[in-house]
Length: 226
Image (cartoon, rainbow, N blue to C red; front, side, top):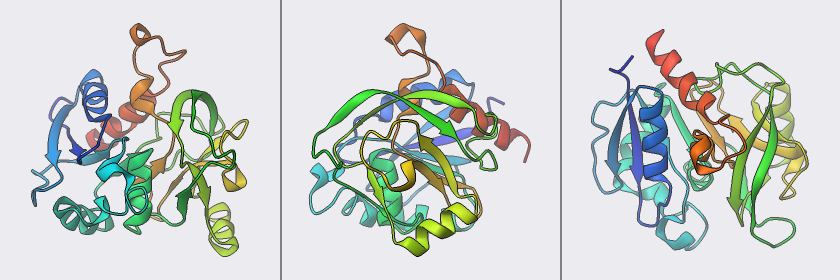
């Protein structure tokens, strides 16, 4: 199990890379630092795109990060099946990179939200959610100003009919269409969500739960079994 290597990407303005790396280590995997300007994924088994404000959120959140040198390696690798997850700004980057459909826009309230948020696990057939039960309700922190998930009617219908909605808000904090908190790609290896599982892995930091460990445990189990 300790042989599993999860890359954690750092862009200029990334805030949560160290938290993500610690969460990876807590489940017994190796956290491998990946720098945005490199062209090397270092042979990792999976990749975590953390939250923050990459490139100061200029243009649009994630719009510049999508063109980082490392993404030139990550995008084809994800399309070939490499497990990839993006949280908050990482989710925004995945949408900008067209690895996931739709976009994240300003919260409907036009206010930044920072709170513990209940979400429901809608889909366990992904590389990142296999440790959960379908329909399980968990608590994860959120902290974003541009977390409102939007997509065309056709895209929303395809997400719903294909079982690609992975997490759904219970009490929508930002006006996301269909209460969507996270989605997956067709293959299930790429997942994006606005909540922060890396901030819900230890009682010591005051989180109301350690539900985020399920994300990191899921990928470890997935890698061990493949």
